Image (cartoon, rainbow, N blue to C red):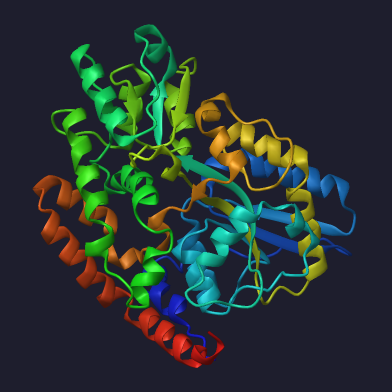
Length: 430
């Protein structure tokens, strides 16, 4: 088996050294005589009030364990700094993305296969986590908690007023945009001034048109992004005709505000934007639908990935206490509280009430017709969001795809080598 790397430590070193001095107080545990100390660091600062409540209720109901939950604004920087100082918390709350992949690859997370709470998690999200491993690993390394959904948000009151129908195919979607334009209304908003927002429609289109494991296939040399992403790029580009004259003039907050004020009928963003939109217009009637990138409606999927999950660090000295914390987090009332505040999708099986803003995608969630965000597999160093923004500005599909393939090999060469070694080692098992 290939030797585990410490790549994640090196990757964060330069970034973290600059902040190490000011973060010197992180991770110091309080003295609570007779109690086991468990520290959880989670990366969702927008959910800080929810976690403050969870921390308070846990400590009020447990005599033998004291829980501390930290919700820093830049949690990944904080975590990487603490890893360098060998001061890891007991549990981390992170997304199902390339950071999670790197932590597994660096052998930093505990195998929690024996945690009984995993039996309550929807298989689709356990599978999504498994697919994030660079090479197949034995074990389970996270408890998926909540997911989000990305497609198209729409102004339900406006749709009802004009009698517009929800599209189920690409041709129907384009026809709808044309119809809305003919009514003198702008169909879409984007927020493309912030590069990361370029990934929202990209991901929602890609899950319909490209294989869910396209990045793995490329790493194995079985295909190229030029082959798999051409239609994705062309259809993402086609959306520009239905947005503002300058699609790069507004950032995320500006686009949320414009949509909240009724300046467009739709907004190509995920459910995570709904709380921000409702801070501007709390009474706005918002719903969502799956981006219909295919002309075969049965081939369309909901773009849904693990937005928050909990991993126990390998060096945690109090595994059973950490499991008790996970049990508490997974209590139905705590999951529901998070869903209510963040308009999220539960990864846990159960009769949970979803926000009305997810009405249009509920059937996809119930049926498990979901696929992970493609950008969860992209290395941050590759800056794919900026590449997509540049492509949308210049419009050169061939140049964009060529650069994508070239940069992928550059920034993933170590992973590609590991995949090659793994494939050689396990060739006889096929």
